[in-house]
Amino acid sequence: MRLSIISFTENGKQLSESIVKLLERELEIGLYTKCEAGINDDIDSDLFFVKTSVGDWAKERMQEQDALLFIGACGIAVRAVAPFLTDKLHDVPVLVMDEKGKYVIPILSGHMGGANDLANLIAAKTGAEPVITTATDINKKFAVDLFAKRNSLSIANKDGIAKVSSKVLAGREIAMSIEAGHEIIGGESDIRFVPYPPVGFVDVVVTSKDDMLDASLLLKPREYVIGIGCKKGKKVNEIDDFILKTLKKKGISIMQIFALSSISQKRDEQGIIEWCRKEGIPFITYTAEELQEVDGNFTKSLFVKAQVGVDNVCERAAVKACGEDGKLILPKVAENGMTIAIARREWKVCFDGK
Image 1 (cartoon, rainbow, N blue to C red):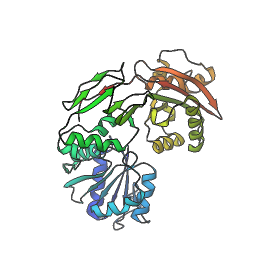
Image 2: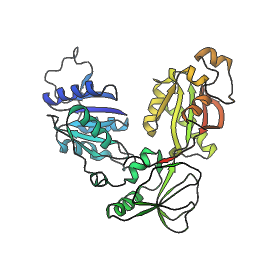
Image 3: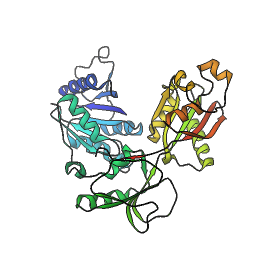
Image 4: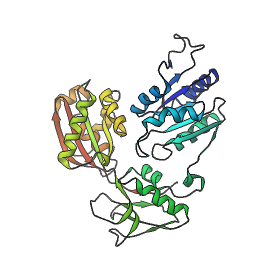
């Protein structure tokens, strides 16, 4: 996650700079301000004065999928982001903090975007009080959208979140059916597990299959990893076209992708980074030594090994990011200086934590 912080006063500017020092190991942070007084271009090289409107700044940062922290009034944040909101599955996390650093308030995308977790992190580092307003959190109830996020489950029908949460908050038991053959860790007192496939209605179904089932909410595991290699400087549109074309041939949806993976030399490849930010998909990299240690039958290239120190990047990276029991389902395919491979990971469901 990349966090962009904007301040409006001298006190807010100083607070934003202190937050960077406290969180620089956990997050990539960009600093912005509308307070021009006291800015020295030589000293404040990492602090950018925003010449455009706050709304235009917010739009640009949201398009980059940054989390936003406004150090100022809630009203400023609300007016700035309101024209660019989509839905709870895709909105970026937005938080507000007063300029004295007393309170930090997540106001958008508390669960799916991670704003609540980010507020708790900032509070723990700065001594501020996190103001969490999400009903399931303050009542210490099972939050199905947070459960989905923490288990890398995509939400097929977002309207079902409110139906399930309303039932939980009313103190009623919910029925959940999880595809057989996958590990289930922990449990919840207000959940009744039903064998898969369920007979009749259930509240939540977790499955990678396309079975037609009667449920309020359908959760699909992100069970695929894309391994990628490319020449330096590949544009995001080239990467996007290649990935989407390859997924379509395999009948895989972008919602089923767990991560994009490559070699550590590609950690700063801008086209890949932009694609992952656009799709909200993690980008994981490994050293050549780590990739070479991955077991399996891979398409070997002496040329690639001479260039980067490992005989195959995309296939090994895809399997490596799956963890244990990852299986290659699409060997390397190449196009215009790019290579892609796809592996399937063994998914599990964990209820530890709320």
